[in-house]
Every structure is written in C-alpha cells, then in structure tokens.
Image 1 (cartoon, one colour):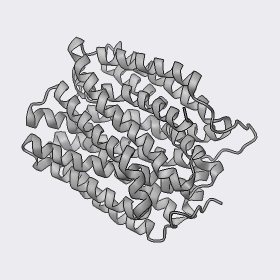
Image 2: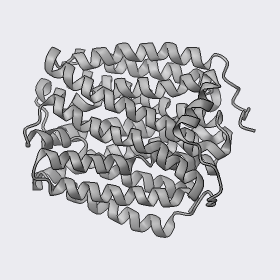
Image 3: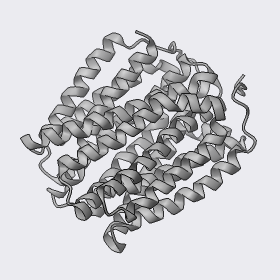
Image 4: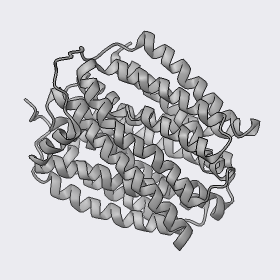
Length: 390
C-alpha cells in the first residue's frame, strides 16, 4: 500500500470518530445546561487549542518526523472522546474538547506528510485526499452517531474513542515515516513563519484567507444543528444524515474532481470562485423553508468548501520551501483555528441575540469580502508548472 493511501486511511478513520460526535455535541452540551452561545464557546475552546498547537506540531514534525506527531494526535483524540463519554458536568465537556483540540492540531502534519511524498504538480490532488477523508468521515460518522444515539447519549463518544484507539494501533504498524528525523534541523517557528510569509504578498494574503473563510464558515457550522432543529424539527439522527449528505458532496469534490479541475484552471483561478460559491451556499440557508431547498443550499456550500480547501493548501505549499512545509502549513492551520475561535462565538451570539438566520447572512457577507482578498492575492500567482521553492 502506498504512503498516500495509508495516510488517507489514517486521517479518514480519525475524522470518522470526529464525525460521529459533531452533530450530537450541541445537544449533549444542552443536556448540561448550555445555550447557543455556550455551544459556540465549546467549539471555540477546541479551536483555540488548535490555534496554539498547530504550528507547534507542524514545526516539531519538521525536526523529528511526521509519524510521531500523527501517532501522538491519534492517542490524544482517543483520550478526549473517553473523557467526553464519562463527562458529568459542562466543565468536563469543555476539558474533553480542549484535549481534543490539542490532539486534532496535527492535521497540518498530515498535510506536510502529503507534501513530502507528492510533486508540486500533484500537490492539490494529494491535499484533496485529506479533504476527501474529511468528507467521508462526515458521510459515515454522523450517520453512525445518529444510530448510536439510540443507545444513550454517551454511546457515540465511547465508539469514537474505541475507533481512534484502533486507528492508533493500525497506524503504529502501517504508517511509514515520510521525513527523516534531524535534531539539528532548525524548525520554522510561528513568528518566523509569519515573517517569511510577510515577505511574499501572495502568501500573506493566502494565509489571511484561512482566517477569514474559516471564521465565517465556523459560525455556520456551530449553529446549524440548532437551526435545523428549530426550523425543520429535525432529530439528532436526521441532522446526522444531513451532515452525511454534506460529507458525501465534499468527498466527491475532493476525492474525484479537485485534481482534474486544478490541472485545467490552476489554483489561482479556482480559489476565488470556490469562496464565492461558499458565500452563495451559506447565504441561501436562511431562505430555505423546504428540505429540498436546504439540501440545495448546503450542497452548494459543500462544493465550494471542497474546491477551496485543497487548492488553498496546495498554493501555500507551493510558495513554501521544502524544509518549512510543516511550519508554514502549521501557521496556516493555526490561523484557520483562530477563525474557529472567533466564528462559533460570534455565530452563537448572533443566534441568541438577533435571530437564527443572522449567523448565515453575516457569514455570506464575509465570504464575499474574502473573494476580494483572494483576487488581490492571486493576480500574480505562479503558473502550475513553476515551483518557487527551488
């Protein structure tokens, strides 16, 4: 089995556990007395840890190799779901999500792993594998979580913990190292990565997109289950199936389409179009009063996210030196996590204070600001065959 296939399976199984609990988490938190704003803060706590630890794990993987960091993340995810399953108060739920955020901050390491084993021309396709793993995790995870919820509110958490434990064992034996350890190698720190990015106008604006797009999208993500319940009366299981539909669309785009489209039009043209599509999808959600309209809106959103993520990661990777992949992608992920700190809290506040459609209308407006940033950053982007890191 190729290293790409193994890392895909590793990330997929990890995200399957994540997908199992995501649709259920708002209701699980509500059972401990949380309102929409506190549910948003729960997502914020998870993302704050990712903001703090993504560049740490990324630059550490540049020094000691990718494999140890990936294994450490799997172990942490297993522990976080275990704590969530035995939670007896809202404080323990927050503790579990904090541990999960620290563990989940290793996704940039998986992206750096892919950068290690792919050529620049195939990098967007390789990054699409991580996105496809996300999508497949959201196909099967929410559906499994919905079924398991019939056996009690903690049953999905126990299952996610067991799944991550099995994934840890499998990865230990099957996942090869993509980068040799070198304790003398200077790792790229967060501030140094930012300093280097600021020397390239394209790169710093691309990194800004990680924050802007993720902040807007995460406000939608944190409140969507509550919106679906209140407008349509959806149950936990139904919401799980809806997330599975979103995941299926993501997996189709990222696993099948993104590599082909990038080869034809390039990342520079694709990114602003993809962000505009995300904005249209989110903006349609408040106007969806039937299931068909809601499915059309979230499918549009998922298509945009499916193209944007891999293209953006590939573009940042192409503008970064080979020795700095983990550090720079860690900085990018850190900025995305900072967006997830701001977005859910803002979305939850708007949901409670101004009505359940306001998180989506504001997110759509922000997305179209991001389109302008994308166009400004990519006007002078290098052609697909160029590798500015050499």
